[in-house]
Amino acid sequence: MTNILRRVVVMIGGSGSNLQALIAHPHHGVHYDIVGVISHRPEAYGLQRAQKADIPTLVVDHTLFETREEFENALLEATRTFRPDWIALAGFMRVLSPLFIRAYAGRLLNIHPALLPKYKGLHTHRRVLAAGDAVHGASVHFATEDLDGGPVIAQRTVPVLPNDDETTLAARVLAVEHQLYPETLSRVIQGLLNIDQNLVTVDH
Ligand code: GRF
Image (cartoon, rainbow, N blue to C red; front, side, top):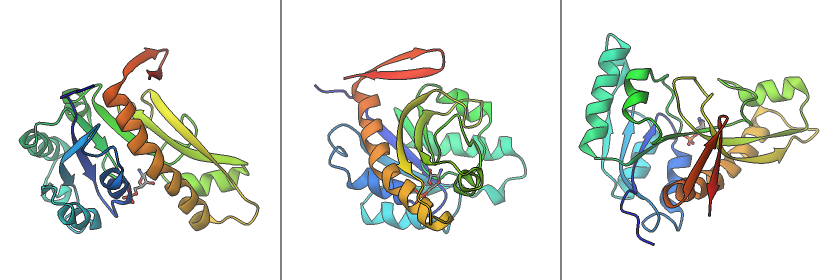
């Protein structure tokens, strides 16, 4: 089946290992096309990953803007140059206001390193260890005006092992993120979404 609405812009702020996973996945170029990468940090290593894959990049350095509104207007302008159908946030570390979110409502995905709705926000691995949870994981969800609170599309779990520290646990979660994000993005782009009571299911 051909679906032309498969142009994806990935927004990053750091290492970009999820971006790398999205680029390297066999579904890239088949079910989705990454047509641009935008970073809010000029030194983000993910920019180099994109360049190596011949994907155009833009930097919208958040430190150069006085207000969130000016920053987000510049971000909107940057995204529009790539004419995206979808935006995938992958380590983009700025809170987005309704100004940006509304422009891409229903087409804006995020990956979060926890089993939402548990552990929204930062330092998820530390908080999971402190709580003594036996299970942790990652979630892909729609980004809405409710930070880390939009409808969850897919999750994958990992065990928390007795000797885990933040580093070992983070690595285990990141490894499943790298599978979960490309697979979920593909399914969302190809599939039919059912949204009910803040829960999204995807038909195959
Ligand atoms: C990932 O854990 C992602 O879930 C979180 O930030 C991290 C980004 O890592 N939002 P990377 O830049 O993709 O390597």
